[in-house]
Image 1 (tube, rainbow, N blue to C red):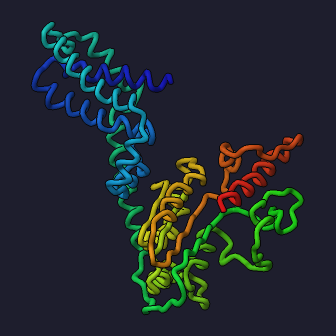
Image 2 (cartoon, rainbow, N blue to C red):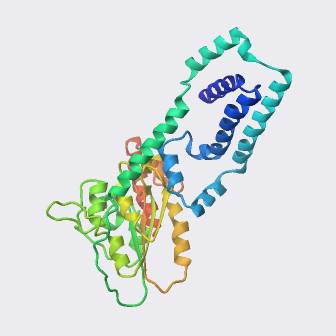
Image 3 (cartoon, rainbow, N blue to C red):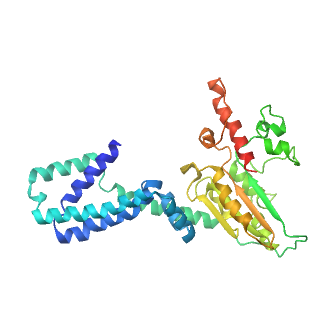
Length: 350
């Protein structure tokens, strides 16, 4: 809170030198006020400009933008309007009263000292520039993995079918009740007919290496994924409509290669456009677009992939919206209790 007050005071001091002059007001103060007013509602969600907000802006279509803006509280738009009104009001008062702070040497010296000590005057501009540069790099990295499909036309027989693939992450098999863990955290798998695969090994020792090899037909000699032979492209070659619903990030160190596969889908929805760690969005949020897809009538087969955050750290933050989480008296095992609960939560998505 203290940092915000200092920023407001510093901004007010800066504007005070330009607000009384009509030309400087409309050339300097008003454009800044307008830019602040436009970004203010977004700032309430994303904070200061960074590559996360830039990528979200560039990767959002009209319907997503409309939905996003509708979720911002009306009071935030009121604040935006207030910025413009206050700027005009300050100019009117300063102009009528002929307030000219630059003529007061003491005020000028104290203002300069405060601005230099309190904050870096160019911080916002540099953040804006840096965000743009990082965004450019991240999108270029994303395009690097978007290889053209090498699948030929495929055939599919039978009646139209919905294929659902749910990808969970950071979930160890030995913590699943259905595989013998003593806590009953897999109710759906336990109470419905399922075929459990025992002995399957991951396609890699880390998330990207694992998923990219499992979602493509990899080069087995080099053990590297082939982005031109992905599960999405294979389904599309057989006339299956594809959907990728992700609660993972779209770009970032741990997101980009996998999201490049997802972006090939006929419809790709990313709840988080930046790095997955930037926002703690519940996996339950995937259920709304998932249900909307299922409610659509079609005579075409569909492949719907839900890419969840699963049990990613910090796992205790992932289970805030689940009833009756597992608890323990032993504080050393509290994180384990959260982890076991997260498996129950994400199995309930089924």
